[in-house]
Image (cartoon, rainbow, N blue to C red):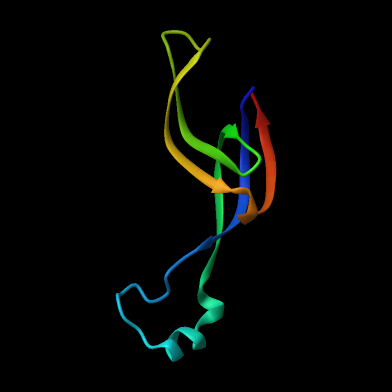
Length: 89
């Protein structure tokens, strides 16, 4: 069974975007260094450390067997704040 889930998670980012910045400017913006994210997708794989969501599913000639997926996103479990199951299929 696959689950359609919504996941709230925290991502890392570079606030500067360029190669060189002063140490002071980075220290001043320390609270701007993470992003609150929300992803919705089909939970295709899960390990003790991460989950993998996919946005799209493709079936063979009949809806009996899933054989291709697209739009994958791996999210480390340590970054997940909340995950809610929307649908089980």
